[in-house]
Amino acid sequence: MTAMKVLSRGQMKRPLIAVLNGPNLNMLGLRQPGIYGHATLDDLEQVCIQAAERLDVAIDFRQTNGEGELVSWVQECHGRARGIVINPAAYGHTSIALLDALLAVGLPVVEVHISNIHRRESFRHHSYVSQAAIGVICGLGVRGYAHALQAITDMIEDEDEG
Image (cartoon, rainbow, N blue to C red; front, side, top):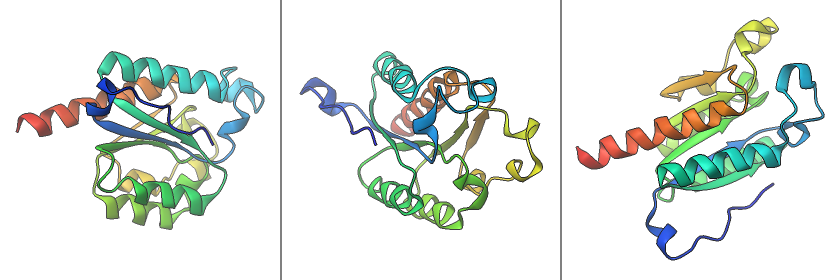
């Protein structure tokens, strides 16, 4: 797990977006680079940090291999975060508990997959998480996270203006 960076006083006023990552993303750069690329989890975190700075939002970037821990992190977002960017990895295809947690917190969710799950094995074509997401970004590599953060930020701004 990568914990949230310490925020300066000026950053504390920024809306918080949770960036949650599921199993095996700690193996980025080593695991099937032909599918997932050569970027590491640290590289991915840097993409998110740079996007967050550009968008003037704060992020809480985390990765876990445990389903229960991921569900708990989603629940912690209630009353704390303004949105969730999530790469549920394999749990997207299997976890009703994760879907239930995302629905319970009532936050905007953008689901991200580094690879295009629709060009892969048929069991990867269905995602329970998609039922809670306002959008899904897949197949754009780690850059998909920057697009997801942009989408959540746009929704937050629309909500604040409305």
